[in-house]
Length: 348
Ligand code: DC
Image (cartoon, rainbow, N blue to C red; front, side, top):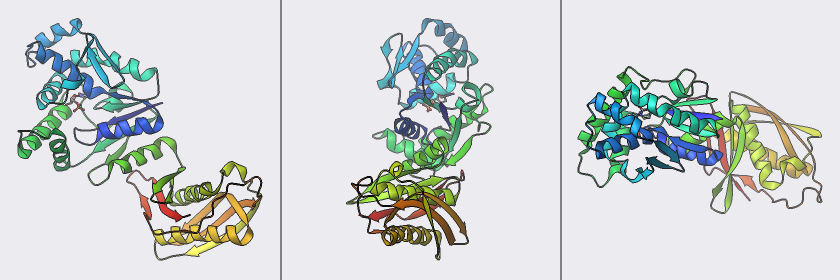
């Protein structure tokens, strides 16, 4: 599977692509670093970056390789030298040269086609991997992006205003070049990261890549539960699965018998807490565990079918008692992409 993440500098691509790759156990390809490695090598050999013929003539003398976050040119590891503004600007200039793009194309394709990869760059979803299963386009306001780069470069002599101007200029160059300009790829999901945390963006991309799912997250002595889905109902259903999974292995519960519940609340968050507490109440009342949920929601009124079976001490042993769903980390949210998340903490 290939996940492409494109976007302008400072939109959070690198951190987010690395995070997504590590959560999915995918390889990670930073294609900007390849352009930087080439730019650094050209600069260090004294080649004039603005001289397109000189750059083109140098290309056949280089062999570029990447593995495990290292970027080698003719077996020389350039990784430590790639994050300066000089290299950033030079890489943007050479990236407009068709010969440079053609030179780097096979390096990128060969890497991603042999393994599950998250590819980060400017033309991943357009030119390199137009048929990728998941295509993301990250954006953020120029001010937010300049702030992020400014913090990343500390200590630095460049002023914030200068950096902001360089970022705007670099965007213009990357977006207006003739070959493979930075544009939103067809069928990609746009995520504006200006007001989102890194974790929220990673969660959103994972939910697009993986579909509905649930997970636990740590919260002091208690457990956080999170349901993610394409609709609010799916997110609530997944949150209920996460709740049951705190108690026992979901696969050990047969959905033999159903119980109908309904609740009403003033907003979505309260509805989630009421609903989860209702499940806890029904578990206690009927001495049952549930492993399948069908939820419908209309204007803050919820009705659901809970499918499960009587607790069997032997099969379901190891069960933890859940006291209640709490208001801690309570959130029911719909991302711009249409993905819903429903989460809170349960008191165990
Ligand atoms: O993502 P970055 O800042 O490390 O990228 C450095 C430059 O390389 C960027 O200004 C544009 C260019 N680039 C590109 O043209 N195509 C890519 N796929 C990746 C980077």
